[in-house]
Image (cartoon, rainbow, N blue to C red; front, side, top):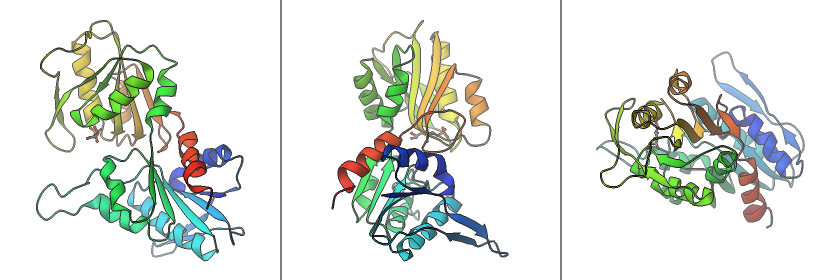
Length: 292
Ligand code: R5P
């Protein structure tokens, strides 16, 4: 297999090539035309080769780069093209919430798979998005990677900031043998949320080392509110862990001010990146795609 790393995912692509036994790794050439349009070129011989193209689709430029690179790799004569999208942009618009809206996640799935033989992504916002692909599509999980990391830290309790994250926090709690708790979240707007402890019996919080686990940290509003709520209940330390660290604007600093630790995987380059999902992606490439 040859591995190509797009601009949004160069480091992770290199790690994946190492996990694949030092598979040949290349970075494409990119430039902008005077009118701002993107130009890409992939080098090297690819006739008859299986190519793994790694590129997150945040932001829109990342998406466009991926589409152009897919075609470039096809033109270079590859045998099969496996597209790895560590962070799958637009995944949160996974349904039409209000009349007149698109199902953006489906639109992206249909377009990114066009030139691909298979797609691999990580922690989609909702697993149903996999069904929007018509080609073989696989979802790696960021949970084992974060669990590998948390195993090395003192943690007493895992917390999901919302009910939507129950399966995630439950799975991580199971791996680590820890109790878990899911908060109740009410979204006020795209930047503000209200969080409360669930009614009924909740695990003891006072004096505990707690880690909030989420799929994506975007504006940081969710984690900041969750950390404040847990601090008001006298936890000893509060950490924040996510698969996808977008950390928009001043999110990193705002979270740093209210937490003791921040942990993220490398699906996006970010300042909290502490563990790689490369082994988890490489496992899918080897197990499900290498033969054939
Ligand atoms: C929401 O359902 C997600 O799981 C995250 O909690 C959310 O996207 C985080 O966004 P933000 O950092 O902007 O609060």
